[in-house]
Image (cartoon, rainbow, N blue to C red; front, side, top):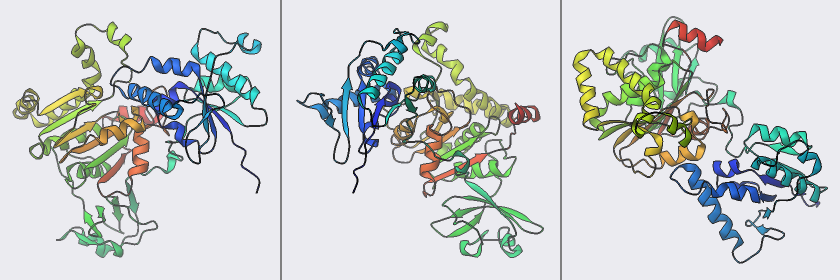
Length: 441
C-alpha cells in the first residue's frame, strides 16, 4: 500500500485567533507556525475578548506540546496527527523584497511561507489565512493559499430555513387544523423529506391553507396561530412562525435570519416582553465589530456614551413597540429598564457571566465566530432562553463570510434538535421602499 504523501500547512495569525484548536484539524499533515505569528499573538494575550482567549489558549497548547523538546524538525501534535514546527524569519527573497514592504508582518509570513515551500519540494505546501488579500499575494508568488474551512458551512444555498410549504394537502387534514384539538398525527402528512423537530409548515389544500409546526416528541402536526405580542402582530407566515418559536417555552434556543427590515429583532423583543413574567431578566446584546480601542477614542464622552450609538438600533425597536402599545405601555417599558429587568449591553460585557432564568437576545449574530456562538450558549443557566438574530449575507467582520460566520454554523449544526427552532424571514415589512432597496440594490 502506497503511503499517503503528507502536506505542509502554514498558519496565519488570524486562523489561530479564530480557532485556537485549529492545529488538531489538519489530520496527518504537518503544520508550520512562522515566528511572526507568535509575535503577533503576543499582542493579543491580555484582555477578555475571544481573540485574547484564543491567543492565550494557543500559547498554552504549544507549550504543552513542546515540553522539554526543541522545535527542530517539529514535535508530534498527537496520535494520527502530523508535526508542528516554528520557522524563524529569514532575509527577504529578492523577488518578494522587490514587491512587498518588509514593514508589514503579513509580508514576513509570506516570505517564510515562500522558503518553507522551497525547502519542501515534492510536497504540497499551503498558506492558510482568513485574509483574502494575503491569499491573493501568496498566489501571485506561486504559493497555494486557502481559507480555514473547518467550521465552514459547505453549501449556503442548502442551509436549513426552518420552514417549508407542503402542497396538495388532504382537505380533511386542513380542516383538523381549525377544529379542536387543532392537530393531527404527522404520519398522515405526505412529505418528500422527513420532518425535523420544530419545523414549521405552510399546508396548502385546494381551497384552504393553514400554518403548522411539527412536534417531534408527540409526533403531531400542530396548528400555529397568529398571536399579537406587546402590540406587535405578525404580518406574514414567517413572522408568525418566528413569534411562535420565541413564545414556546419548550424551545430554549431560537435563531432568526433574514435581510434588514424583516422584523427579526422587533419580534424577538416583542416576544420577550410578552414572556417577561417567566424570566428574571430580559437581556439584549450585540457585538461591537467596528468598535476598536482607536474608534472609542474618536467618540466624545465616557465609555457608555461611546457605546450608545452601537446600541441605538435596539432602542429603536423598543420605540416601535412603545408606539404600538401607546403611552400606557411606554411607562411600563421605562420601568423595566429602570429596574434592570430589561438590559441592553454590548456583547463584550456578557463574557464570563452565567445567565440564569434570562431571556437573552443576541442581535447581529452573523458578526460572531462559531467559537463565540458556542461560548454564549454555554453561558445559559437553568431556565434561560437564547434568541440569535442576524443576516448571514450582511457581515461586517473582516475575517467572516456567509459560510464561516457563527450564525450559519449554528443553523447548520443545531437543526434537528428538539430544544432548537430556526426561521428564515424573507419578506421585508419595514416599508415598501426598504423592501425594494433590499431586493434591488
